[in-house]
Length: 203
Image 1 (cartoon, rainbow, N blue to C red):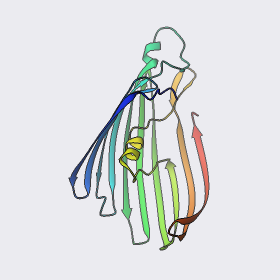
Image 2 (tube, rainbow, N blue to C red; image 1 turned 45 degrees about the horizontal axis):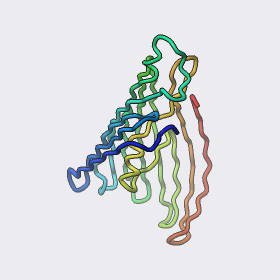
Image 3 (cartoon, rainbow, N blue to C red; image 1 turned 90 degrees about the vertical axis):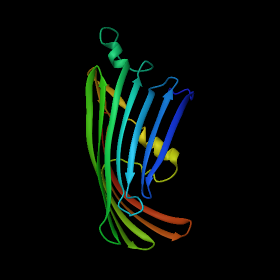
Image 4 (tube, rainbow, N blue to C red; image 1 turned 180 degrees about the vertical axis):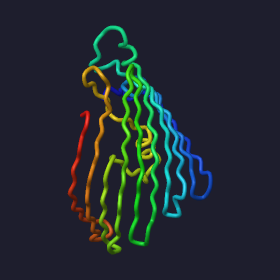
């Protein structure tokens, strides 16, 4: 919310083979919380239908604006912190109708005191007919960035919200469980029905 919109974003996408690519992306801000971010993602077996993604991102964070840290010794360690996100995801097509995706994400924060979280995720998708499918998701919320390069950079460089509980930093965690049914009525129209439950920690 404190980003004045004055900064730079870099992205380098390098195809390593027909179905493997390497993305390096980062941002250098002119203020705000996320001052500097640099990350890389290796994606392979995309065209085979069983893609794998491995990502590592490092963050230099700036909490000087609006972060409730008391004055005194150790304050600077909280205001200028470092973060890291490591994640892995793999999708496996079991049959023509059944696809399974699983992965995990580890978030780490060094802000005077350490905070971390490790969250698994899983998704089971069943293509009942060519126009309808059923999906079950569990674990960490993950936005599918199969669209533009800008979407992939946004997902890659994201970092969880940081809160203070008892003068100690904590990372926000959202565990999401969902069952969704999607039916395509025409080329541009579809209907979705879903039931979900969210468990939020360190909000």
